[in-house]
Image 1 (cartoon, rainbow, N blue to C red):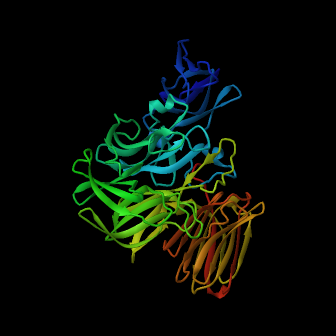
Image 2 (cartoon, one colour):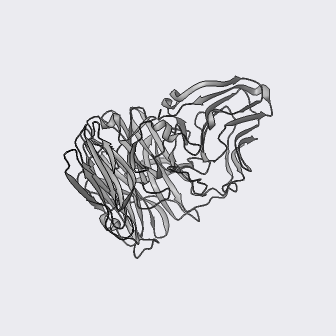
Image 3 (cartoon, one colour):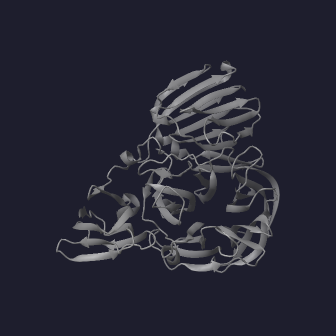
Length: 554
């Protein structure tokens, strides 16, 4: 038996599953002795939403079941207060009052968004609505591995400090009642209207192994007036014909040329494709044809497409599933710059969104004149180091996008710099060697007055190291002694003028020449940070500044 005080909350949300083969339940007793029993999931964890009275005490008992994530929800200021997480520990419920302490472990990012615990992948439903940034995301609340997909949800005033909100979408009932199927609420996007948010997403249902015969993916739509509670979800699009693979997912919707436009990632007649749909009202959709195809050998299908009009150009984005490029990088994301008129895309230039190996499923949205993108810091090389109550997956720093001379520029949004703390270093025209840097949570800015080769040691682990190295016109983020060391994370630049490096425990992001190139990579390392920079021409180094970076949960 465990006692819970509800504070200003009026709901308890619990993911519960029966232990063994018997029936299990979450049993709630109020102050008057009235007892209510809520059945746990028999085959999968089930989200129980239990109504409570605010400022009241309840005994909550787990009878023949286990829970993964539990929190209090439903309060008038939920977007500012967030949910209150509870942990079952030693026969009692423990409130997690200080998220900063919860997140402060060697294997968890401090100023990149990561889930409260367990699995995260693609960002979904990014939008600005009624004073808040909203980010939904693919989640498995129950373990640090991919499984049935839910939508998690967070909100923010500044796109940096996030507030955890109730899980938004759950897998289909037929999945929750099965032990040999997989699927759920796959990725999608959002359109923020004046009085509601309209969500478009993929539902997936199939066996443990995908196949054309058994796996089904289709697009649905659902709306919410408050970003928390959802109306009835309804099917809007199925694949048009058998030319399409079952890979038919991740709808992204924008308003362009006086109509709603949607792109879907798919595979048409064995060719990775972006399919285009159009609608006058945003609810009834017509297939208009193939917007873009990727005929590079080895690409299985497009995932997580995006498209947007920016700086006088149309940009189409696609994640290349199961593709390994000539440098050994797994599943890169490409952008395609050109013109779009009457549903026909004319390609002018293409490039990698990110030149390292841990940036995928990127999605963008527009607010207040800025095009902001967030990507999943992915782990395709299986380098994750589990820890108790840890998380597998995080999000990139939000990036502001621009198109210049056909190149997609990406720079960190200005708000991230408010996390800068004390200065560790501010020097010029010399090499630098610093250790014990804020437990690997720091920011470095390097300015160059003329070109120079560079060798920076960014991280060390047991028999491993991570370096940022420039030799001639090549810049690479090079890892040794880890599973991803065979990937050559390299890009070409004409000259090095500026480097920004964001180190955050297991994640590093690098921005070159105010966004001309960008890279994100996972690297597990010793808990004490390190920054050792050697320059072939020290006199060309205008400045090296290094600052601590404060966590976003304190």
